[in-house]
Each structure stands twice: as structure tokens, then as C-alpha cells.
Length: 106
Image (tube, rainbow, N blue to C red; front, side, top):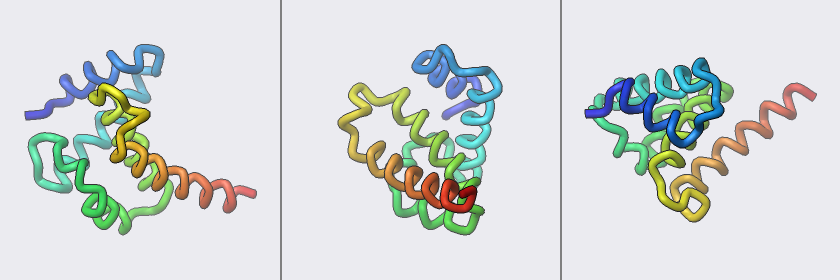
């Protein structure tokens, strides 16, 4: 079972310079996702289409925040994150949402 403490520790190990409030937000988002999908761990994150479908109902900036949390978590547990296809796919989705945000702000 994945707990807040486990997630916090995992993320802090991989990103020691990130503010505690940022880590707290990542952990909170990941815990909300587990609740949303009724899961006790984060293995379901590998199913990108299900995640996209479920998050599509949310505002795009909220989606982007969830994707950032997912990416940070996956990077923290992956040996070679730059080569991981799942992380690359999530990055692409998040980057598209960032473009939308930047266009609206312009």
C-alpha cells in the first residue's frame, strides 16, 4: 500500500532541493488520484489513456498539475527516466497543456 509518508520520502530523495510545500502538493495530487481510481498503489499510472480520460473532466491547469505530480513520481522511481516511454508521453501531454496556458496568458 502506498502512503503519504512513502510518497513524500520517495519524492524528497529524488528531488532534495524542492520546497516542502511543493512535495506536499505532489503527494496530495497522487493520493487524490489513488482515491479517484480506487487503488491502493500507483501502478495504474502506467495506463495513460485511463488517466487522460478521467482527468479530461477537470480544468486544464488542474490537469497539468496532476500530470506534473505523476511525472515527478515516475521519475523518482524510474532508473532511466529520460528513456522511459510512459514519462515521455506524460511530458508531451503536460507540455500541450502548458502551451494552452501560455497562449491564454498572452
